[in-house]
Amino acid sequence: MSTITAWPSQAENWMDQKGKPAWIIAMVLGFIIFWPVGLALLFYMIWSKRMCNGKFKNRGRKSHAAYSTSGNSAFDAYKEDTLRRLEEEQGNFEAFLERLRDAKDKSEFDEFMDERAKKTTELKESIEA
Image 1 (cartoon, rainbow, N blue to C red):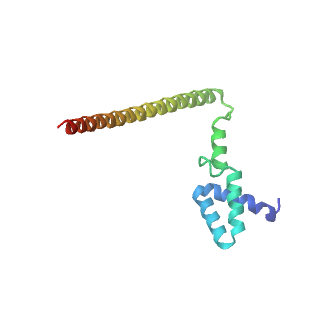
Image 2 (cartoon, one colour):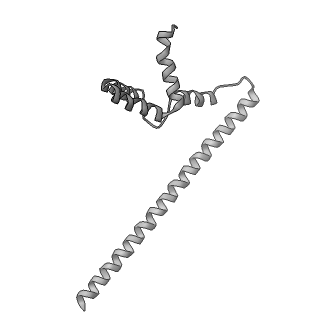
Image 3 (cartoon, one colour):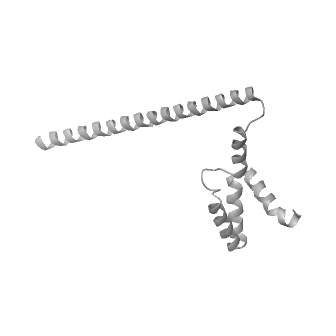
């Protein structure tokens, strides 16, 4: 591949290594220098899903490498078991966080309802008095 055709790919890889802030800065600079460049970068970022979930190409390749085989069956079995256990722990932790959020929401709602009932009782007492 010649240098002329390789530089966009190299620039894209460099930006992916720097992360989402680098893409945003490049887009803003593109708008400042010449607005169609900024608009083109914005459309490219949306089309390539660089603005979604913070996932970039290089990071995706690394996670794919976690599931590839090494050639050593004992190590691959250990790795598979460890990854399965970590995914299970992640699921359990996310379920715990959801229960924690639900409990907090319920306590805030109960507190709101208690305050509302108290205000209603106070209002009835003030009307009767």
